Structure formats: structure tokens, C-alpha cells
Image (cartoon, rainbow, N blue to C red; front, side, top):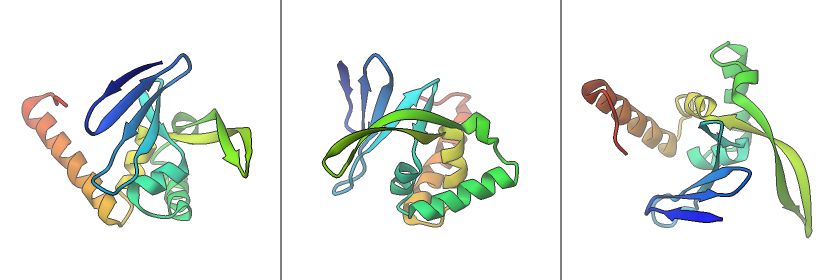
Amino acid sequence: MKHNVDKKKQLIRNSTAEFLIFTGQAGEQSIQARYEEDTIWLTQKLIAKLFDVTVPTINEHLKNIYDQGELKREATIRKFLTVQLEGKREVSRNIDFYNLDAIISVGYRINSVRATQFRQWATQVLREFAIKGYVLE
């Protein structure tokens, strides 16, 4: 396994997938994002952690996004086999992951400090892109 380390994120490569680990500010836990098919994938639980809200809140916003036709489920959801601890047992389950399009759509609907920070960051990136024609990060 090969590791590239940066102050804010860590990319871990193995034979099956790549994972980005986003580390928040002091005292915040990191978020491990799956990178596959040229996009980032998160579970509802991780999206909730990213925006500092509950899983039911994320579920409600995703339902509205799909019901209103903003995104298509089949284009933004993938099942990935995930090993997780349940009690003292390791269990493999197919878990729904949502791609970056879904994460961004949810981020624009959430009312939290973290979601506001996300929107400010996204707006700045878009502004730089519109002015310069590219973004270096």
C-alpha cells in the first residue's frame, strides 16, 4: 500500500480503491472518503459527519433531491462491499455510497455551520474558476 501525506488530506491507494482522508480543524475527526470512478463517494453517515447533522437529515435531503428530479439515483448511488465492526464481529455488507454530485447537492440544502463553510469554499472555488478558467489546488 502506498501513502501520500498532506496537511489536510491523505490519499491511500490499494488494489481495490483509493481513499481520501479529510482532516478538519483542530479537535475535529477526519472523514475517510472513497475515491473511485473519478469521483468521491461517501455514505449517508459520513455525509452527516461532514456537514455536522444527523443521518435522518441527510436521508430527507437526498429523498427530496431524487423526488424533485435534481439528480438520478442510478447515476449517483453505488453499492460497495464494506467491512465493518458490529459488536466484536467483522461483517461484510453492501452499503450505499453517494457520489460528489449528491454530496454537493446535499451541502447546498443543509443549514449548519459546517455546510455554510462548505458553500463558502465551493463558491470561492467556482469564482476562481470563472475568473482564471482553472483552479490549482
